[in-house]
Length: 65
Image (cartoon, rainbow, N blue to C red):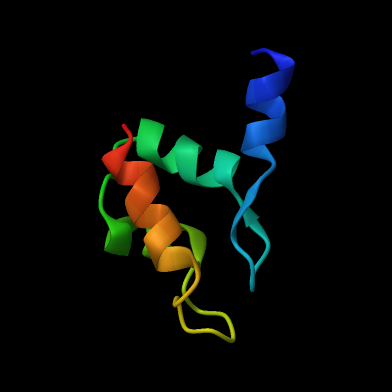
């Protein structure tokens, strides 16, 4: 893993809960490939915004697989 990948993995996807991209990528690698599945596995979407900020980011992660 190079430095760029490490830095990218630390990028927050769910700002309310502080959940980083690497957490989502771990779950995707384990076979969870739906927005709802990733939200359930990580707790994303349960913060103060109700998923308004992270849902599009999670969708983009899945689209870019």
